[in-house]
Length: 111
Length: 113
Figure 1 (cartoon, chains in turn green, orange):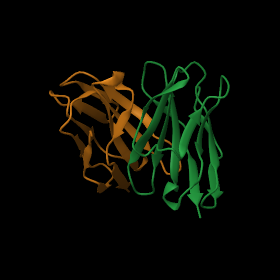
Figure 2 (cartoon, chains in turn green, blue):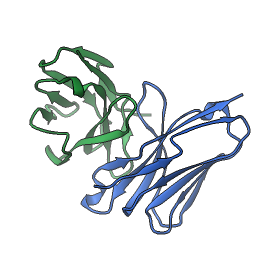
Figure 3 (spheres, one colour):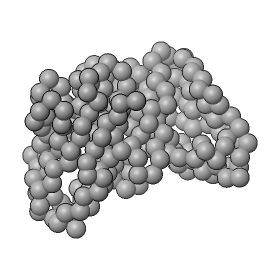
């Protein structure tokens, strides 16, 4: 069964550094999402992307965050200058008209 | 802001027992989904309910969507250790084409032998 894949599985970075989290959504999916889950807290919506543009974003998704679909297969989340509070699991998800399919996440640790 | 509250937050039961997890909101959702999440993995979809009052069964799991589409429940019959995990409800809004999901606070279930 096709699946959403995310790399790396774990990323450690220093505060102030830029990170790029990578996702390969399921190939025929059209809608792409990033969610995050801080340890012990609920899954939170960050941003949705459709037709090569952001369709919705949350308050969390400020100017430090950006998304890109550089080619026909990858979907990336960039954090320009990481803060300690950005430490979390970041999940990519994709769908067509049905429910979301989630990747296994990237654990980002900011030190 | 749409909020989904799940209860209980934690549940530890013995194998063979029945349990119910609740997911409540003051907001109306176009659909509601239940996910199960294992440590170190992403949420995996269990079921989607769309119609108010809808009941869906998945083996020993029974899902119900409230008549007003504001709440849902998950009932597990004769729980097994393999049912252990984090159960999440998530609602799709009635506006914006259901573009995003609002996740509940989660219920951590542990089933012991």
